[in-house]
Picture 1 (cartoon, rainbow, N blue to C red):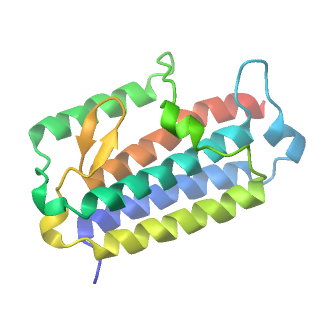
Picture 2: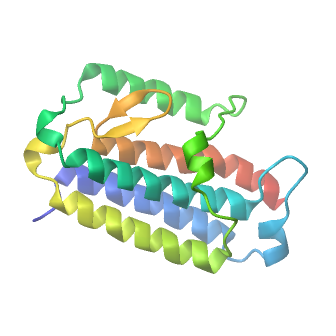
Length: 176
């Protein structure tokens, strides 16, 4: 099955964000990637968090999609929630705690090469899943965001991209 054109556009944008971030970090030495200022995450921890977040989210999305016929479609409320989510993710003075379930399932910081491999595998898995979604289920609310609630799969990918953008300034500060 071919991927829905809107999902393909969202997926390609998401891949670009990942590639830009990995390119930014590709020349950093291990000491810089693993340096952890007091009380803060290292770049390696942030990258591991991003990958774990996407992997766990995809696991949840797959599970919810099994009963997609029984779920509601997203609408204007979810579109509004996404606007609010984008704004809050981009405001540098707003801090969010990662959900406890995510923290429990996030491994110890991975080496850069391993993060890259795992992120590539996770995205390949996401792509395969997106190609399998029937057209009638594209707008089904199958992703649960810890703050704004249930969203559809395209909105989930938008969040993944915003999540990268949210952590990029933090990463840039750690690069200095």
